[in-house]
Amino acid sequence: MSLSRSRTSRALAGGLTALALLTACGGSSGAAGSEGPVTLTYWGWTKGTKQAVDAYNATHHGITVKFEEIPSGTAGGYAKISNAVKAGNAPDLVSIEYPTLPEFVSQGAIQDISRYVTPGLKKQLLPQAVRLTTLGGMSWAVPFDAAPQVYYYRKDFFTQHKIKVPRTWDGFRTAATAAKKADPKARLGTFFPDDPTTFEAMAWQAGAHWFATEGDSWKLTTTDPATRKVTDYWQGLLKDDLVHTHVSFSPEWTNSLKSGGTVGYLGASWGAGVLKGTLPDQSGKWAAAPVPSWDGKPASGMLGGSTTAVTRNSRHTEAAVKFAAWMSTSPKAVEARLSSGQSSPYPAATALRPVARKAFDTRYYGGQDVYALFDDAAASVNGNWGWGPATSTTNTTLKDEFGKVAGGGGGSLAAAVRAGSDATVRELKKRGLKVTGR
Image 1: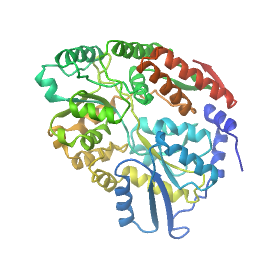
Image 2: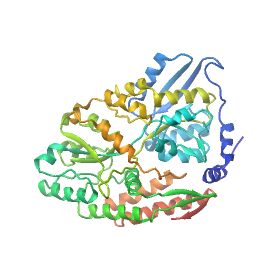
Image 3: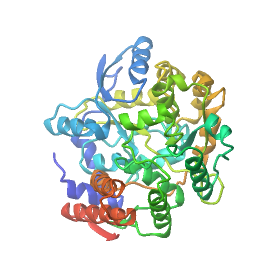
Image 4: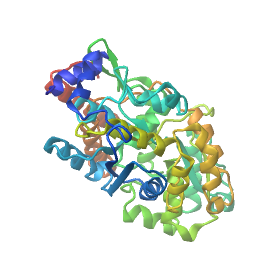
């Protein structure tokens, strides 16, 4: 059977039970034990996933998982998944980040797995992550990890120049000014023009709520005071040349870190593994702190974070969810992921955080308990944020417009956000959806 994207998205917006029809378009509810041995296919890209799959296969019988590493979502992974779903040959399981999940749901690409996401499983997971995977009252993925914001900084640079680690955004500007004065090439952070999710995490932290539903309509709110505060603030940092504008994870960004031109990184929990793997020679020089907030009180958004979803092509839904739940809640899964040496997963399952803390080698951060910091950051994540069904349109426009601003091509961040909102409204209306706000 088929269900148009327009009808699906209307159901999602209104939280209607008609969206459950998507499940019938997918596979069966068969699992190992009821239909004999099952082989599942799984596409993903996060560091350490292969090691976790290997650990599962070595200790489980009846369900075998074949893992294929694909490019990250925005680097071509999502297009690969979408094309495979359309062709009818998608894998059973795929990695999907929280921001993109509603879009895959609205396209009818993944299955409603509410039947298998039990209350007991939900209780094991970070409530904010469960909320982001629950759309229209149904569960569409198993939260894999969480990604609360964190600020990483070169403690040797801060100590040498007697710069105070900022706890507020006003303090960040003061520290950035001091860093530039101490070393004209040094910057405490980077505005990534190609990565709207970093900006969105800061808007989230400030209390913005871009996407919401009202009845059968989507409501966009991107001109609110919280968003304006963030755009004005970063516009000022760019104007005064207090942050770099390198493309995220580019050779220029990496070289700037290596040379001391970039001495701070506004990232997320997974950034601990990124720095460790990218800059091994700087072991002991880095530390982590809470991301600055507007009033100095703990506040965080989420920068990324991923889920495991079951595609509509899968014929082994129950077995797939069983494996996804193991990946998210098993101590062995976390330990295996960390064994890669370049991963710092912050589990969505609260009970696994002590396991991750114990398994993560903290010598790179001078023995600092970074997972205790992640715990505090996760607890401070604003739970009101939600993502919309056309995130790719929103973020493609933001990326283009941010690039113009950062590259000196004119315009403003506020205008860029408006352009992203306008493009999203046009896309939703093109799909036949009702949209209000801006």
